[in-house]
View 1 (cartoon, one colour):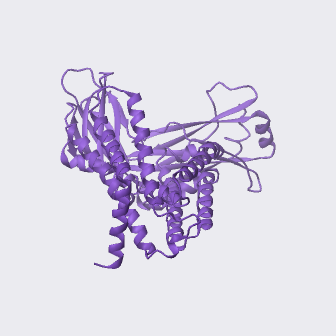
View 2 (cartoon, rainbow, N blue to C red; view 1 turned 180 degrees about the vertical axis):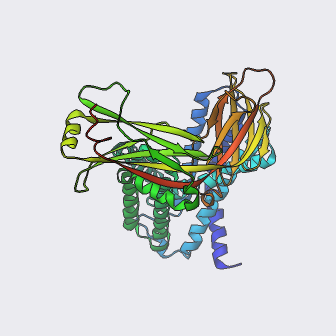
View 3 (cartoon, rainbow, N blue to C red; view 1 turned 90 degrees about the vertical axis):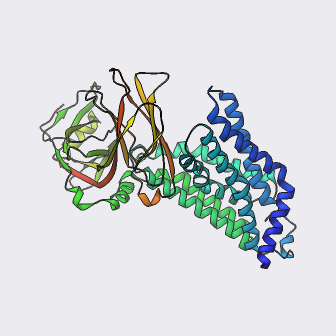
Length: 483
């Protein structure tokens, strides 16, 4: 057995003997949370909140305690003389965290799902959520834990970072004008991936600086810069930039299937507006194959003067629902009357850009709404049943590991007038979903006829992403239009 292996075993044994009460408490709370919660039939919000808080405190205390058993900061500098390699010390701490946190969490989630009647295969998929979803947060917390040598200092460090983010994130999200056009339109995964990679890279850098170099101030600088960048980035990231990245995953051949024509002329808005405002509508006539869906994530309007300078920008997201076939998309715009008159006098023209995504069906499956759990290929483990609090609606619950459809559409079989219900679009690429576990729930109106209804689930994949830009003479229709 190599020297490094012996050192790792010695460190692991020492940490476990000293921290076993916290290990047992954290494991017990994890099991209580993951096994008890699925069995509860009453809300019991007070008990749930208490267990969640206690569980979080126990896990964080254990993580910080094991790191600070061999503190990397302080005034003793005993690491100069200890015959422990930095790599062995880091590996021992990583193994301890995996064995004492992720293993109990995964096992208890699997058991909790099994005791509620789910199959072993689905329980295994569900139980892997903790390991897959908490790799990043555990790495970040471990990095923060290396910056101090006591639990009090570690708690203060974490609270300081959380307070800084909690105070500034709402401000930066508000100042970032395009955040509504990024999140909820299927392209939010790009910014989320950027933030995750930034914070994980910073965390890995801090762990390397601390365990390999013992450079405390450099580590603090890395944490500070990464936190400021992650908090302030929403003010500078635009929908145009993010959708530009999404268009890299587009098929040029599929883009030709999207038909889009801006209706000519000027349309006065039907909305009630003040006399001091000028209001207009733009009408986009779109068409795609009947079995496909077209999703318009955002509309961007610019007013441009004769020298090509942008004088004013506006954006519109609205409540977009992917729909197949042909339809007309109507967007409403307003301008202060004084600004409108000024633009007309300066012969300003408008330019409107639509960010479109084409989704095509890949598979379809029927699900009887009798409450039983079934595996639907490509969609996951699903069940459908009438809602207890509203029997007029059906509730569909699905869980899937790995690649997820970009969208799932629900219809009730044989009910042509019942409409449909769609899961929000997500254009995350399949290679990024390889290790993910996702659970989603969606409701749809239940037909009034007797018998057990059948829900048809149709999975869609994104095939094309394109910006279509139209130049409008004058201010939304030209000088001849006077609202």
